[in-house]
Structures are given as structure tokens and as C-alpha cells.
Length: 288
Image (tube, rainbow, N blue to C red):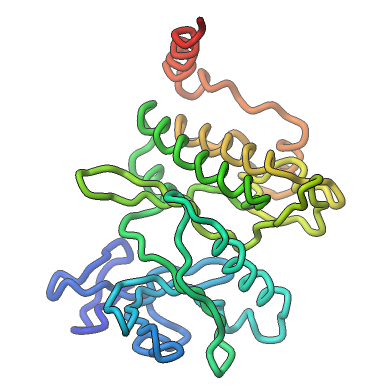
């Protein structure tokens, strides 16, 4: 359930705003941060999302009145876990280096006097691609093409800075409505991203990422990974956008990993017959 922090009315989880006063609804906040002003700069108004490492709050930058998002490292995970704190703070440094219209913009980062680690970033008015797929089923070829183009542009920028995302998936792709109805894609959550040297890949030190979207090399300790791991994950997302199904899935992680490592994906035409023929026709038209 969600509730309005102003009038306290309760709403279903899918509701975004209070119908009484238009205020952004909040999830139940187990960390009691709603209403607090972090470092006397960012007032947290509502808890709007929870992830594996962080909680995301709708906030106001007090000196400018601008609405922003503040991601806070989950306090219960941070206690006695310097590795998680390192990953969280590295996300701010990594994304702070990237300046691209399809990558979320980082405004500030730091820790409060009582040790709460936070990242302040631009507020995105929209919803994740994951929600779009679940709600609308297979997306149109034109829509998929435009989303794919913008995600690829974001990856081109991050890869040019020798940064790989390593956890590319629909929940980390945000769809934002801009003026005139234009849809802008934003890639978010570089929490387990990896910086690469100019001369080559980086060895996998632990199995990380979301198994349904992870590349085969992410499952092999000691294997070198590079920008191609993001390209693989983007391919999985492309398959899912076109078919509303994953190319590989199973009830156990071990069986899922086996499929990624050893099996070809099912043909697109087996799940959406017209898609494969349309893509083939499009490719023929571009051939000189």
C-alpha cells in the first residue's frame, strides 16, 4: 500500500499521486527518512522505490525548490558492509563522469553526519521499461527500434568512457515523457558497473548482475568481461520487447545459467511470427 504524506489517505501500490491534493504518494518508509532534510539540502518527501541496494525518494532541493530524486543506501545493508558502501559510492563517481541525454544525471553525492550514504540525481517523470512490457505486452517494431536506439546511444557513451553497466535490464531503463509527447529513454542504476582500462577487459571477481539478462562470461569467475556484456544484455531486452518473453528462463538459477552457456535462444518467429519476417524485410530494404 501507499499513502499520502499530507492527508494520510491510503492508495493501491500502482497509484502515483494523491487524488485529494496531488502530492506524490509514498511507500511505507521503514527507515523513517520521509520528512527529513539530508545534509540540510534535500528534503525527502516520499519513498517511491526500493532496489537491491538503495531506496529512492522524491525530494526537493531546498535552495532552488527543484524536484529531484535521492537514492539512499539501505541502512540495514550498509551496517558492517564496506563492500556495499564502496559499490554505492562508486556509482556516484562513475555516473558523475557521464554526460549524455540518455543517462540519468547525477547532481550530488555524499554521506550525512550519521553515516547515511546518498546520491542526488535528476527527477524522472515516467516509468520503467519493465512496467511498460508487463502492461502492454509485445511492443511495436517502431517503438522497440526507438528505445533500442536510445539505449545503444547511452551505452556508446559509457563504453567510450570505459564503463560497462553489467546489470542492464528493463527495470533499469526509464521511459520519460517530454514536451510534445516525445519519449526519452534514460539508463539508470550503475551500481555494479565496472571501469575498464584502455588495454582490455576486467576479470569477473564474483557472479553479479541479474541472471535472466547476464552475459555468459558473467557466470564464469576469472573470465574477462568488456563492453560486449552490455550488448548481450541489450539483445535479451530486445528479444523480450518483441515477444514479451525471455529467451532463457527456468525455475532454478543453475538451470538458467546452463541455458545461457549452452543453448541457443528460441527463434523469434516461434513466439511472434510476423516479427522475424518484418525484420528480414527491413534488412533487405537497407541492402544496396
